[in-house]
Figure (cartoon, protein in one colour):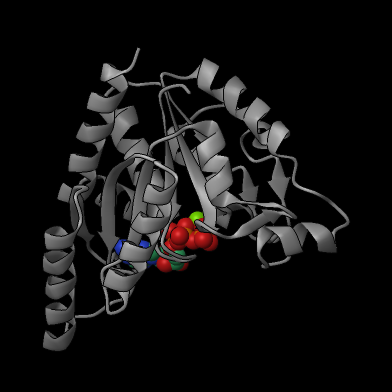
Length: 245
Ligand SMILES: Nc1ncnc2c1ncn2[C@@H]1O[C@H](COP(=O)(O)OP(=O)(O)OP(=O)(O)O)[C@@H](O)[C@H]1O
Ligand SMILES: [Mg+2]
């Protein structure tokens, strides 16, 4: 369905927005029209609008699509989407997301869609994020932590995608915390090496920790866009988009 990728995470807070924004910047730099979508966002703080994922993605893409089109479901409470929606007396309608997705995909040569939380996070009473990815029929860029615990989370997420035959463009491993100790470096090296041995998808990274990412977000996105991991990822996405009818 279109020339899009779905950026999913092994968990919440693993760096989906940073990877998505950096990928978008890189694609835009190469002259492409790139749209963005964050279908559902929770924990939206009206006092800090610039820190919302959807606003960050729109800034990276520099498009004038409306926030309502790009991010139809926005909730204040920092809960799982189903709970955040229920607390506000709302339901997330998959058909509305698909409709907005189609509008955006028709406007842009390429579209980067960011998920919410991890793959099995409940979105509606009888559907979760993975169901939405299946319905959109999009290939996934999976983002996970390169630190301790990253191997298990990545393998579980890849298994969940494989069970639904959802194609994976790449697994991007991200350094989500500032570490410079020898132990952490060994943990990262073992995560990269063991995952490269065990999975059949390309394993990219580690995407290095950017100091003050939240204090200087555009700079962190630029640094990430210049990284080998995102450079490689954007080449894969460009090849994939070029190869589709
Ligand atoms: N490589 C990195 N360097 C520095 N900070 C990072 C890095 N990756 C992620 N972070 C920080 O970690 C936090 C979570 O990252 P991010 O918002 O990209 O995660 P996410 O997977 O999009 O989370 P969500 O599930 O809320 O959408 C943010 O504060 C972000 O700035
Ligand atoms: Mg995010």
